[in-house]
Length: 285
Image (cartoon, rainbow, N blue to C red; front, side, top):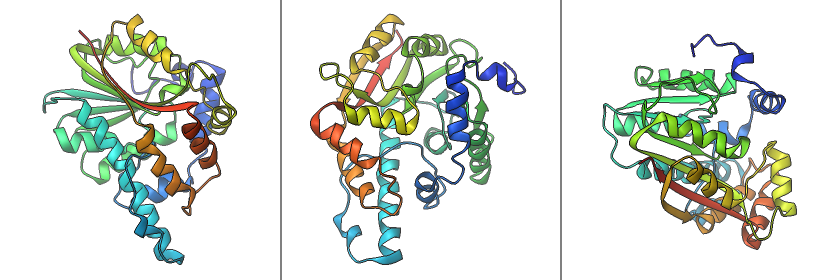
């Protein structure tokens, strides 16, 4: 697959066109942009850990700035957790960020490990934005973002020591995705996933339905992740329920100047147990 591959070659279904258009049209999305402006690392995921209640004191612009900075700290903490779980990564290794958004975690990975990192997204806007940020931080020689489909990346087989997805798997078929990741990973390579998934027992709750509708996604049941991993020879080595660690983030976001109204469904779904936030680590034998 060349860098000049056409849009029709990358985006192959009507649903993918809708998803790409949704992200391409969010150029002024203040949630991601406002948080990224804190230090130039722009994330496309949520956060983990307790927040400092002192950020809620007072009112006005100073309060808003404290909340934004604290939300960004929690999102960066989540990115750090993903990188921690990749294990031993050397400067000669190569990593893949599948569904790389505006590129923050890829840049963090290159700065931490000194290795090459490739990010892929079906949003041409995101790819351009992320490459600009890598250039600003002087990382273009090690970090590259590509307009490619994570279900069919075109990268060589066994090219990567590590692959991660951070809140992107709800846009694709898991069996197709993990087939591609099994091809891309070297023997001994590792896959790290952070995702929201619905409770197999309760099924899709009304809150999960509202999240799907808001983000134009299709959240999977928890069990399907493990079926798809096993079906493609990827062996889970760690599973952590991050739900208690992400609830404070959503409580803070609900009180933030960038609240969108989706905070309520997330909090309801987490608290009622119909929705789980998971870390899954799997290895390729």
